[in-house]
Image 1 (tube, helix red, strand yellow):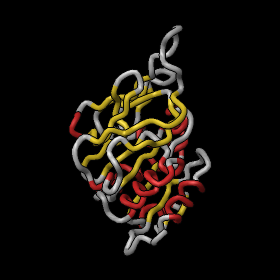
Image 2 (tube, rainbow, N blue to C red):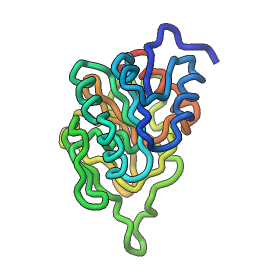
Image 3 (tube, rainbow, N blue to C red):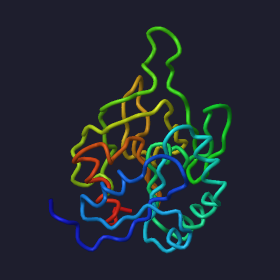
Image 4 (cartoon, one colour):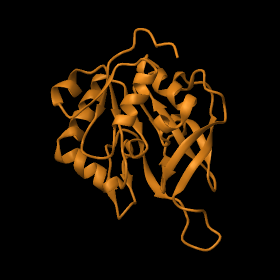
Length: 213
């Protein structure tokens, strides 16, 4: 596969949650310079940031905040640094989540995180695990060269509810439509795992690394 030319350096924020090497390797597969790091100086100097997230929203926010990386992310976003939230990392961009009670997020986007309805017979299977489609809402550089209704790999029990529909650039149907790709100015996020989503996921990561936002 041809390498992507003139890509910006990408720092994947390591705050003690999940195995991040697969994300790093996915960027490398597209010829993009990326590093997993908890070094604050590197996080402050990188051209772009990736905020991953695995597991419970509250636990992720607690680990991020305990290291002071919540404020670091807010500061870098305010400076104009492009930020990509992945899975729970996308959820953390919003104001709050109802998972295990109310937990505040980074508040970079207006909205909240809700649980899929799945407690009664006949309800959805929760969590959603597996391949599902992303329907594109218009044209956005993050989704360049990715076919509309392409399949991506999802693992989640909660979904984002955005107050501003303009930030939703891709949506997925699981008992109803919900935002699966969001973007506003230098902030973007995906609910799925691009590193597990084969060619479409790799292309999205390359789009981010080379300046989609």
